[in-house]
Image (cartoon, rainbow, N blue to C red):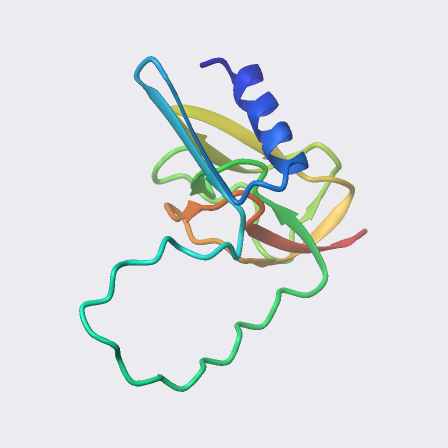
Length: 140
């Protein structure tokens, strides 16, 4: 599957009302799910007592750089290298702020505008869902 085919699938998935999507072509498989979509229910052996409802996680506030695809987040360009950006850094529009690896392909994620990185919200090596927050920033 080529990058353009993957991006086309991502675009179509984003415009659809589907909650999950799985595509297999040759030996490649691409699985997508929307952030906050429920996980498939596992069969219950016996009814359990109702657990107290957990408080919802606070939503990230401010402007966010989000994952444009599902993959593994890398803060640096190579192991042992310093992160491409860190909180407090001023970056230019189009500057690479991180890498996401999907299907053994590295994608550079660029800053959407001239901005200051306020917080890193993803951890190095973490698997990111589509549209997961990566960095919080403010325009410079």
